[in-house]
Each structure stands twice: as C-alpha cells, then as structure tokens.
Image 1: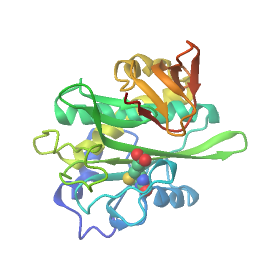
Image 2 (image 1 turned 135 degrees about the vertical axis):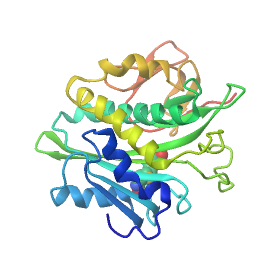
Image 3 (image 1 turned 30 degrees about the vertical axis):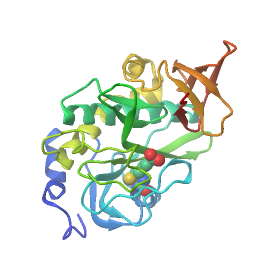
Length: 275
Ligand code: BTN
C-alpha cells in the first residue's frame, strides 16, 4: 500500500477484507489517497507486468473518466472508485459480454448492500441503476468503464473501472434527477471494503466463463435484471428507437422498431424515451 494517510478507516482495511475471502482477484491491491484515474494506473500496471486481478483503488481522482468521453466526478472519501486488471486471452468479440457481466457483478453487490434484490438493475450496457419507488424510473448508482488491449488478434487484458456512489447525498444540479447512492437508497452503514470484496468475488466467479464461453451462463440473470426490457428507448444519436426486447447472446441490445423489425445495438448509450 502507498500514500494511505488520507484513506478513511473502511478502505484502510480493504486488503485484509479482500484477502479473507480468498478469491483470485485482489491479491495485489494498490490503495491510493489520490490519483488521476485508476484506469490509467491499471493501464500503467498492465504495461509493467502487474498480475491478473491487481486492483487500484483511490479516495479521489483528478481525471476520473466515464464512457463516451465523459468525466467521472466524485467527492473525496465518499465513494468506491477502483479498477481491476483482468488478463484474459479471448476473442475481441467477448469484450461486450465481459462488460455486461461486470455490470451484473456490481448489481449483485449493490443489491446485497441494499438488502433488496428487485430494485437494482443493469441498464445496458453496464450501468447499475436503482428503480424508484413508483417503478416508472430509475437512477444510476454505479458506472463502469471497460477498456481492453489486444495482442495480435486476441484480447491481452481488460481493465474494468468501476465507480459506485456509496455515501454521496448531494449531487451537482445536473445529476440530481438521475444519480443516487447507497446512502440515499437507505443502505444502513455501507462499507466500501466489503462492497469491493463482494464485487471482486462475483467477477471472479463469472468473468472467465463469460470470456471463454460467452453469455450463456449469466444470460438468465441478465434478463431478470434488465432495466430496459419492455421500455421505450432511443439511442443517444437518435438512430435507433423502439421498445427494448432483451439482450442477445453477443451482448447487443435488441430494440423492436415501430415497423416490427428488431435492431441489434452493439455500442453506444440508450435512454428511455419519454412521450
Ligand atoms: C460511466 O458510467 O460512464 C463509467 C464511469 C466509470 C468511473 C470509474 S471510477 C474508477 C475508474 N477510474 C476512472 O477514471 N473511471 C472509472
């Protein structure tokens, strides 16, 4: 561990708590008070030969990144910000399924922390959202940024960067209506080290199977927790609109258009269509 003087007590115990689970992920943990982006730290680690399952975790990031070029902002010490290096040799076609199974792992851990499995869902491709009490909408509790590197025609490693809103109660005005946290959803006293250990445990259980055999093992779980299923959706660029009707074995979102044709969306973001 390095630079841990400004790490809160729950995170300070992270190595001990993850080691007690005995899993293959998290055998090496780099705990940082502050960094640019844990995904960049993992990228450097990958270049320098870090082992499969190495984890970089930080109390705060100055250059936290989200998908689609967005930034990921999180007040120091409040949330869980980490990246895990997965050395998986598989076809690049398996990256979208890997990304989906990461969402499922986070979903499972968040549902456990909230003590409520039904309200916590994966919003394709891999956001984790909590359904509001009316059941009509949801708010994002966690985001995942998956970045992969190739060696020839094969994936050499995948970096999975995960941000879970744990303690934040006050979000910036532009996020207020769309973001939430474990604390806001009523989790008693969420412990970030336990949450990390739960996520790593779920990933360790499923990710290699998915990398080598595809989504079959987790498809039923994914379908049971698909936030978009049956909802009117449109892509951010407006090119696809219709009713979401599931996720196919390649990890693409299926959208039934008004003319009945099913479009399969491989990448990008989808939002609920209002009106
Ligand atoms: C998204 O929803 O757009 C993905 C957000 C991913 C944020 C996490 S925080 C830890 C890791 N480091 C980063 O720079 N990004 C990811």
